[in-house]
Image (tube, rainbow, N blue to C red; front, side, top):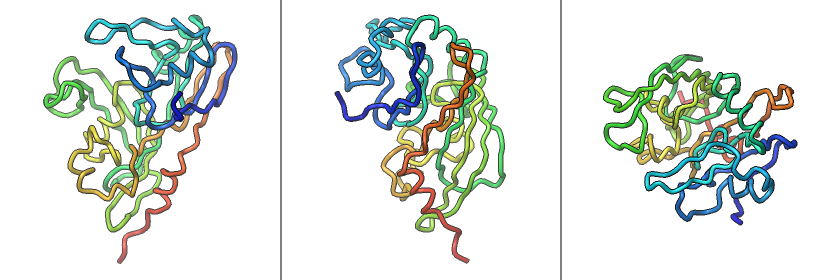
Amino acid sequence: MSTLEPTVLFEDSDVLVIDKPVGIAVHGDGQPSAPTVVDWLLGRAPEARGVGEPQTNQAGEAIERSGVVHRLDRDTSGVMVLAKTPAAYEHLKQQFHDRLAKKEYRALVYGHLNERWGTVDRPIGRSAKDWRLRSAQRGAKGTLRDAVTDWELIGQGEYETEPFAYVRLKPKTGRMHQIRVHLKAIDRPIVGDVLYAGAKREQSNNLGLTRLALHAHVLELTLPSGEEQRFVAPVPPELEQAVDELHEPAT
């Protein structure tokens, strides 16, 4: 098994709530790959096998997604809930569908923000340049799906004379790459984003980070048991250190 393993934040007979580390995919694509969160889940809770809805890749091969209700990108760390039973899966799926599950992320972005808070309300489609990517900008292709992200500035400063900001993000919808795409759309992509930061990442000091500076910090929902819970995945030390490195620009 990979040394990259989730940390268990909560577990009962219905669900597992984890803190997913950077660098491990939630599930595979039907091809041989490194161990995933699903592999780890089935090793710990074999009763979860087959829970959820079957999916296939473009070649028609089955993707092992047992227990997955929502997902985080491989390069994003943080809190996730996994279902162990069909009933738990249906309950949690409904929570996300009805937007009752509340999510809060933390991110470091390139540049400063002029406001203390705001909302990005831009539909997301496919990128015209690369079909694998998403876009919330003019020229997006395919079906445009509504997507809303609230943001709040926590702090900002400079590192080696380059400006950065630290933000709290609350996505109201759950589109693929939503936060990453929305921040790119307002020209404040996330530090270290190899998919969406482009030249900003290539030309930046990137706060000395070697990872995507995005972390799923809080998840609030009602468990299948009926209990309302708030789960917190601590901000990883490398991101906290990067925040601490920011300082006011010299005058």
